[in-house]
Length: 70
Image 1 (cartoon, rainbow, N blue to C red):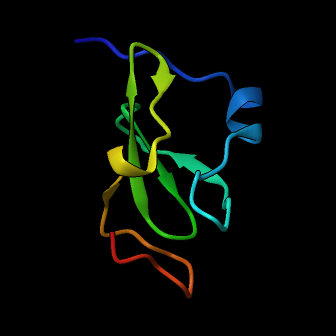
Image 2: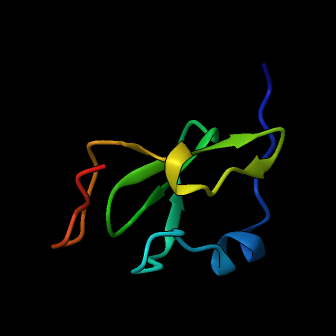
């Protein structure tokens, strides 16, 4: 299934919905965004990031000091 690339300008304004609102980075697979603070991974479905806390999952790539326990 092909994936759609996110506009870099959109990626610049998106932030994690958790209280720290850390920036997100696009993963190389182009199907997820990962929070640079807590490490939650959010799926991109049909080119639309699903930025809901209950839909985020731990990615194992937390980079912030206060990584969440999600």
